[in-house]
Length: 291
Ligand code: GRG
Image (cartoon, rainbow, N blue to C red):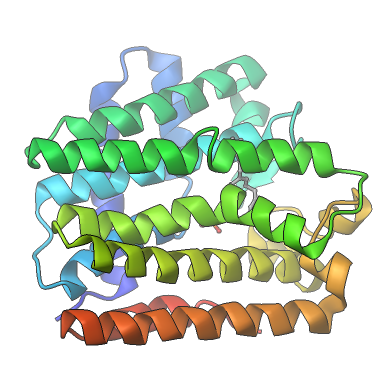
């Protein structure tokens, strides 16, 4: 039986609340790091890892939980740094004042640095087999670093004020948002020591899910209110950002969203055939995209 996202979120929140303060050795840094992690968030990425583990027939133990929560630390670092005055200069995140508004830009930068580093500590400071630890570390470094999310963020900054082609925008999003979501799903396969064919297909599902996630975020920036999103909206067009609705119009963006979702569903079906297991647990994640 696969847990619901709500059940997984409860376990993730409890683990983060208990484990995070133990590894931070400076009071203000601790307050600042815990502030952003505990500000909430959907916990989508670690929940994807844990649901994948269960769908592949394994139980979630403390080691898997720690490795999955490492990704939430890293994700939170990316949000803190993205909100900084030198980047997006946002005042609201997860419905609360952003980290630099509360603690200043210097401490917020360090909170992000601390979360990024601690993520890799948690990936290796556990009782998982060492080759699993090494594979997770390599995969996360590639997804989050200069061949993944950081490169995507650099493309985003450089692309502001320029008109990107659809293929360029897709590449940027694949790196900036998609790479971590792809990793989230693949980590479930790595922790359960799946063959490469399964890990690859998990990657296909995760990448299409990640693309859908970014297109949906772009659409929501146009149609949703700040109260619904817990952050500022309508910023993309005002700042001449490259987005799906900006490039293709709202209907075109919705079409691209449906395309990514049907490709994710195709990968889900192939995974079920390859593993002989039900992959229906992904349905609750695909239900996130409501227009
Ligand atoms: C600073 C290196 C660096 C990277 C930042 C992820 C990112 C790159 C920036 C975040 C802003 C952004 C473009 C968001 C797009 C969609 C997204 C990642 C939303 C936030 O993720 P959620 O919705 O947030 O999972 P919660 O708060 O639920 O965890």
